[in-house]
Image (spheres, one colour):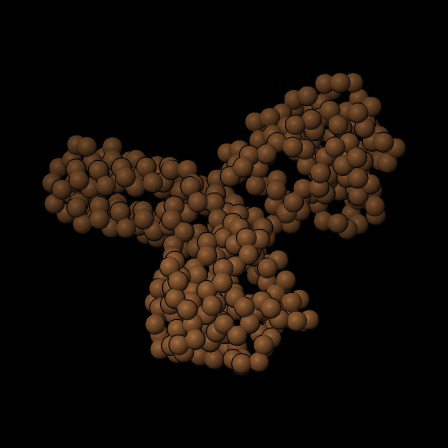
Amino acid sequence: MEQQNDLIVALATPDAVSAIAVVRLSGKGASAVVETLMKLSPGRLTGKKRAVGDLAGIDHLVAISWPTGKSYTGEEMVDLMCHGSPGTAGRIVQKIIERGARQALPGEFTRRAWINGRITEMDVLALSLKFSRGSRPGNDAALSSELQELTSEIEGFIEFSEDHEISEEQKISDLLKRILKRTSDLAEKVKRAEILPRVFIMGPVNAGKSTMFNRLYGRETVVVSSTPGTTRDGATRILNVHGRRVEITDSAGYGGQNLDGKALRISENSMGHGDRIVWMDPLCKDLADRIKDGHEVLRVCSMCDTGYALEKTGWLSVSSVTGQGLHQVAEFISATEKEGSSWRLERMVDLIKKAIEAAESDVALAAEIVSEVLREAEEPVKNADAVERALERFCVGK
């Protein structure tokens, strides 16, 4: 998680006609840039301040500033509230870019808030769930707040169990069961909030990618043909592989012409943080660095049943016809992103179940296990892939 503090700017409200629009700046020098453009005295916007005036002759607006550590992003930040007439906010953004800022990327303000500790990974996932298509905003409480409440309840159990009577063991067991239900519910909520991990089946034309895709899916869903370029639209399905839901894409083959190449570029451009690649080639030729950089890759010597395929160290021999190697492919596809949010909550659920079993005969041991649950709950996120996938779905200005 690389921390950045360069100056970014974006329209933080919808790009449409409205009474008021908001332009947001975040990063070192945000206040100074606005002071210059509004012809304010140096330091006028230092700290938590407000100023009213003209900005570069474009509009009469209100500027509100926040100091480092107090803003949404945790950085020096300024919001400019201008009229929402066509082009006004865009001209302001352009003036700020001319002063050395850059256009913010989708979700970059929220990403900085997360990196700077202003929000947790749970908050990012909750925002993703709240604003994703088809969800109903306001139905879900902040996931981090639920986790904090859960943590308080666990701490109360530990304190409560230090001095107990045998007759209280049932009360402790009941409390743990209530904590288990809350943790299980929270884990399900996080799973819904997390953007599904994605796996791309890639390789040269006629490497057996579509046959593999159909075998994993359990029935024919893409056309299989010996004619190069048959797969063009990058068929995508959500599969349940070893108990885990994964989004799998059957990509067009490398070496194709015209539409094949265009379809392939679309697949490449859609790849994001944490996406994995199953690279299939019966000749065991490795994929280009530009493709594999930043992605975990399983190298597959495909069509091993034909006698045409090679064998190579570091490559898995696979046949979609006989089933050889398919189990290992499925394991790679369904591998858990360890130490991510849902992984941590699932681990907490398992530990609480053990604590419930221990509470029947040894409350002290149960408290010790629950202490481990508490440490897990308070552990900072170590795997950012799920959060980064969620941030990629945010719009510019969020």
